[in-house]
Image 1 (tube, helix red, strand yellow):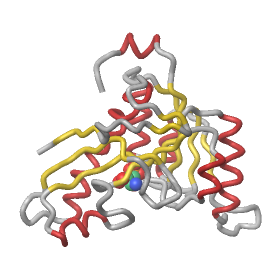
Image 2: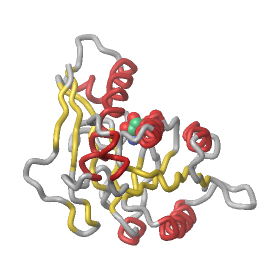
Image 3: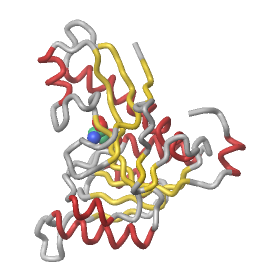
Image 4: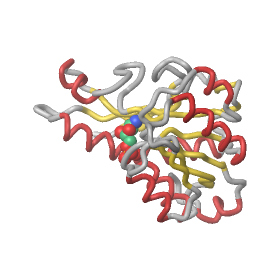
Amino acid sequence: MTDNLIDCKSMKKLKIAVLVSGSGSNLQVMIDAMQAGQLPIEIVGVISNVADAYAVTRANNAGIRTVVLSHVPNGKKMGIKTFEKHTLELLNEWMPDLVVLAGFMRVLSAEFISALPCAMINLHPSLLPNYKGLDTHERVLQSGDKLHGCSVHVVTAGLDAGQVLTQAVLTVKQNESPESLRLRVQKLEHQLVPFTLELIAKDVLSLDKDVISDNLALPYRLWFE
Ligand code: GRF
């Protein structure tokens, strides 16, 4: 993220809706950058599928419109179809330029993705296309890979399969534990998310819903020790 306070305040803002399920540390990074005027973004709403996710507290503390879609009125857990229906209604009302999945832990259907009013990106804790799905740090250690990191990719119907836009890369240390790797990758995520949003907001990455950038230079990479 470049130090461009004045520039950002005068720029047209990228309107973002964020879907969350967990602690929301990446949401917090976006909130902080928005509030400090360090990124030309406006978080127009947050949707959580988990009622007690700390991300909900973070969004509420920031005064951001926040909707929890976790249960139906009779107390049963909300099914994915109902979640998608309500989420589409909200997104059509909020009209974001971009939906960001930041620790959102449910798989969304192809129908939902194609009905969205804008593009959607996801943050994933591995160097895609390696290690799609869960438990990425454990699997990297088991394989003995030297490089690991995180990716931001366009969401398509295939699990963690859409165009990879950006990655942050680190070197795996000898005898490193999954928890140590998780924490190091999380720090990278906190840099990769604003880096990616800045590229999109400034149109370096074009994310028109149907014309995802086919730039051969992708993914843009940030390298760390
Ligand atoms: C991140 O590790 C992200 O890669 C994964 O879920 C985690 C979200 O963390 N998809 P947080 O909720 O932003 O703290």
